[in-house]
Image (tube, rainbow, N blue to C red; front, top):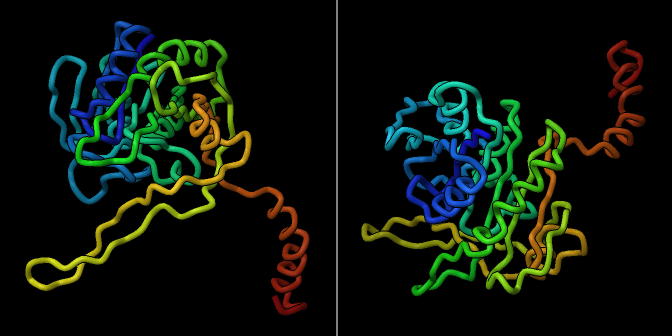
Length: 267
């Protein structure tokens, strides 16, 4: 099995090293295409206004001056030698990518680009303690369960238009109870904020940050599983259409729009 790895924390990230260790237990054909620098929050952005440059660090390892989406696209379509990958793994992200954060996540975006190119893809993230001066990144749970979980998911399979979003809970490893297939949740509190500051020339600027404010997620969601010590597997797809509203608005608007087009009624 040929596996392509990417992430949004950058080529030197500890989580990417953890993912590589996991991937090498599954295959001896592992290719790495990761951003030269951190791209957290890049979502599905592309580098359109400047060249896409890369460094080849060894035979199958590349650092790319771009986003996770750039990395997967460039890797699959131009830089990988021979057959396309059989699997794209993105991560392991430093912190959860759950709830509404999946739309911001470069980690999830890397997996989505794999899916868009016709390759089964999984995004993987590791819940972390709140950051502090003595914070230490700990990927032990992802390392302990990653290979077995990926192997089981690949064996089970999933639709071509779906990516799997895996979130590992806080350690220690003995705390982890089970794996739960979940749906995407939504936080009941806002954790993002912008703090106004002043630079040394007296000019104002803002620094974006996150509050350590836990939500009260409902049963069956990715957040609830992570909070309670379970590995969350959430099938995601990029069709954001709300079908109930399509039906409701269609019944109200479609006929009126047709009459308006014929000049028979105001819209």
